[in-house]
Image (cartoon, rainbow, N blue to C red):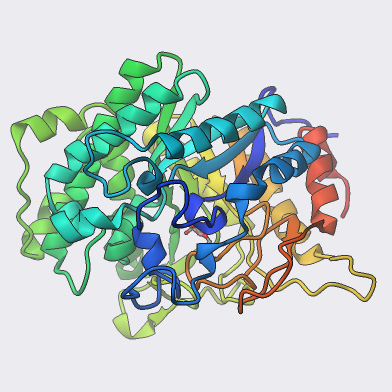
Length: 467
Ligand code: BG6
C-alpha cells in the first residue's frame, strides 16, 4: 500500500457562491455581474437580473440548505471546503462605506456550521463576480478606485472572520479575464488588449494589497493566488511549435509570476510593446506588488496543444479558449480532453517555477448523470477520472512537490459557470434540478460519494486498489 499523501493533507471540494447559493436578491444582497449571466460566461449579458431563467437565481439553494449539505460533506470526511464570499452580499453596490450586516452574518453561520464538523473554509474573495454597481459607476476594474473598494471589502471580511478562516484566495482564475473580460474584470462590450491589461494591472495590485491586509490582520493565515492551469503542449517537436507553446503557457503563467514573484516578468515588456500596450503603473503600484502570495492554487481540467500554424486552432467546446486538440487524448461529453499525466506535469512545472506550496483547488469532469431505474446513480466515469488524476497527484508528491491539499470541483451538483446548465454535473451528490429549473432540489448520494469517502478516510491509500 502506497501512502504518500502527507499527514494533514487537506481533502475536500470546491464551489462558488454564485453557482450554489441562489437567494440572489435576499439578505440585502446587491446585483452581481454573475446575476446578469444566465447563459454562462459564454452567453450574452442580460439586461435585468432575476427574470431570464437564470438558474443561478436559486442555484441549488445552498443559502437555505447549507446545513444538510455540510453534513453530507462531513460524511465524506472533508477537512476543507472551498467556497467564495459573494462581494455583493457584503457591499451590495461595492462602494458603500459600511458593510451589509445580514450578508456578514450569513457567512458567520456557514463557517460555524462547518467548524462543528472540523471542516476548514478556503475562501475566494472574488469568484467570477463583483457588484454590478461597480460596473455601472466605475467601468469595473478599469478604474483604479476599485482597488481601494476591493481592499475595503477584503479588510472587512478578514477582520470579521479572522478567527474562522485561515486559508484565502484573491481572484478566481485571474487569467480568464483575458478571454472573458466581463466575468473576470467587469468590463462590458468589446475591449482592447490595452484596456484589459490595464484592468488586470489594477486587479493584480488589489490582489497584492489584499495579501498584505490578510497578513496584517490574521497572523496565522495563508493567502494564495488562483490560476486556470491551461497547460499547452507543442503539437510537434518543431522548434516553432515549442516556442508557440511557451508563449501560450506564459500568457497564463504571467499572473502567477506577478503574484508569486512580486514584479512583472521580463518577457512581458516585449509582448506589451508589440501589442501597443502601455500600462499606467505608479511607483506605489510597484511597491504594492512586492507583497507576494503564500501559496499557488490552480484549477486543472484538461490540457491542449499549441502550434505555429494559426489555422490549426479551433474554439474548445464549452470554453472560451482557442486550442488544438491532442490526438492522443479522449474527451468529456463537453469536449474537454482528459489528461491525468498533465496534472503531474503541471504540479512539477509550478513547483519548479515558484518554489511555493501548491494547492489544487479545482479538478473534475462535467458529465450528464442518468439515474438508474432504481434511482441510484452509477457514475463510474467520474470515479475513473478522479482516480486517474489523484494517482498522478500522488506521483507528483513523490517527485517532491509540496502540496497543501486537493479540493475537487463541485462536490455537489451546481450551475455550470461556462454554460449556465445544471446538466453539466460534477458532484458526488446529485441535486434534483434540470436545465429548465424543474426539480425538487433533493440531494442524493452517487456511487462516487462512497468512493471519495474511502479515499479521504484512507488518506489516499485506497487509490492503490483497483476500481
Ligand atoms: C472553473 C471555474 O473555470 O471551472 C468554475 O472556476 C467552473 O467556476 C469550473 O464552474 C467548471 O467549468 P464549467 O463551465 O463546467 O462550470
